[in-house]
Image (cartoon, rainbow, N blue to C red; front, top):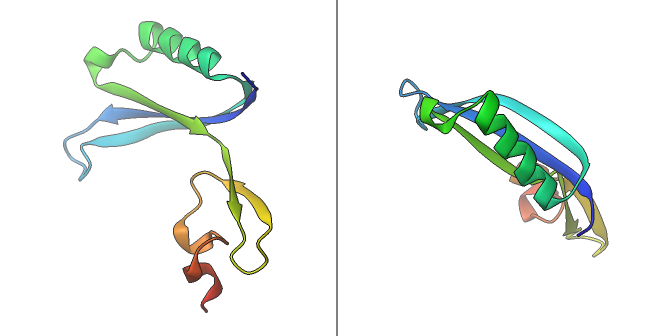
Amino acid sequence: MTKQDWTMKIFKADKRTLTGDRLISSTIWRDRDDSSMCHEIDELKSSLYPAKKGYRFEYYPAKKTVKNLMTGQDVVIDSDTPWCCDPSSEVYWSY
């Protein structure tokens, strides 16, 4: 498995919010593979952020490759880039 950068977000259950949870932390993990990310999450769950206290984790690759709609070239952008800022969307090019 190739190593890459990952974004890990930690949420805590919170009934005061519309989604039912709030973001506690967002961190970029550098040069990891999927299995090492699972191991890190297991470590954090057992020591600092137990699920029984309402914590949950999400992790995904920090970057993604999209095709520029105008030129057809590949562009690397952050995974959590909004649709309006993504060069592969028509919204990005219609001003």
